[in-house]
Length: 270
Ligand SMILES: C[S@@+](CC[C@H](N)C(=O)[O-])C[C@H]1O[C@@H](n2cnc3c(N)ncnc32)[C@H](O)[C@@H]1O
Image (cartoon, rainbow, N blue to C red; front, side):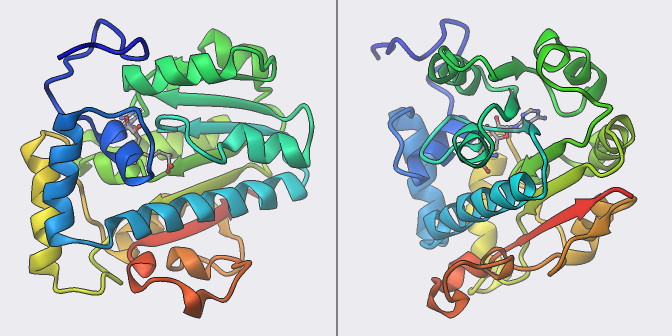
């Protein structure tokens, strides 16, 4: 298989990756046949998967506009993925020119492509790091250059925590990040769940198994388990809700039923 310029030498392009599968669902071009094969297998069980991803991106953009409207000028987006249409820096900088954005991902394709997209953007950068090592993220030269942790930051954890098993203590990592950021900071979060999926959990489980097979298990959590990530935050209205119901700009009734799978919320520290 020929290796395109955007695929770093370090990656094994015969193994599917979560970020490239996601890129495929969103209509991107940074994916390989192995990724598309895994994606198609998951689609057999959950044909509405791309609708979930689109609702996730749409929520993220509304939440970034909300944060920028509240006066936030710094964004730390962990699990940012392969850049696609309507990225955080584009949305944030459209509202607040000069807004600073640091992307973080542990996937080399996501990092390489982000570097290429951000080449001419002095106010945005990317770090190759793991959510589970908050100190490495916070002490990275990119964060030190662009983010002042003594002023409010919007921390984005959008469609990432469902890739972290309880055994790896995602709650601990989220709490460490919360404690490192100034009061008035926001957390912007989405998470997959069997709650709200318009088909029986056993059938949706077939799609979840595809991720297990590629050794990136998808951890479906209940609404209560997802709410625990907001410990120490006050919920911004309307709370933890299905994605289309968070401050919608168009009638939620018009959304595809799949878009109501999983939960989205924004919290603020006092
Ligand atoms: C489904 S994508 C979400 C991308 C973007 N946040 C969005 O919602 O559109 C999940 C991303 O999280 C990244 N990821 C998963 N676990 C991670 C970890 N422990 N540390 C850093 N990134 C991680 C994956 O590489 C992938 O790019």
